[in-house]
Image 1: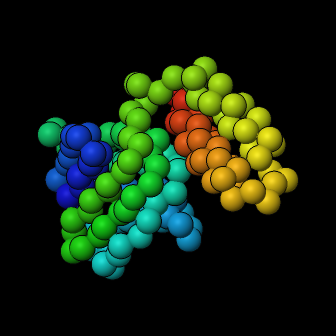
Image 2: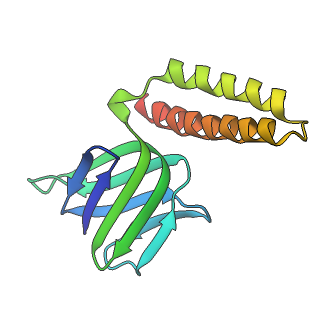
Length: 143
């Protein structure tokens, strides 16, 4: 199966020997295997788990923290288009933990309001929380 993982400005991962792709969509967590049914789904903040074989046919795994946009599956081609795409080597646990704490504080501040502007800030804080949780899950895999 072929896979391309793309962000706004670059292709982060590409392989033609992918065994499986696992991530969370807006409805549930999915695993895509070869000959998967066609699919177009929005992705949630999560860890993208990729199992593939390298040029010597040795099993490998690559993981990313992802957020927003879509996964498209057609035939044996898979494309993941993500707004946030963080490689395991680039994840910073301390920064992600700080972002999580900041998001929780902001959510608490804007939680009990009826003001539409403050509700928008609550939603932004919630997005920040979800992104930081995805990064923390990826950082936990590093250990």
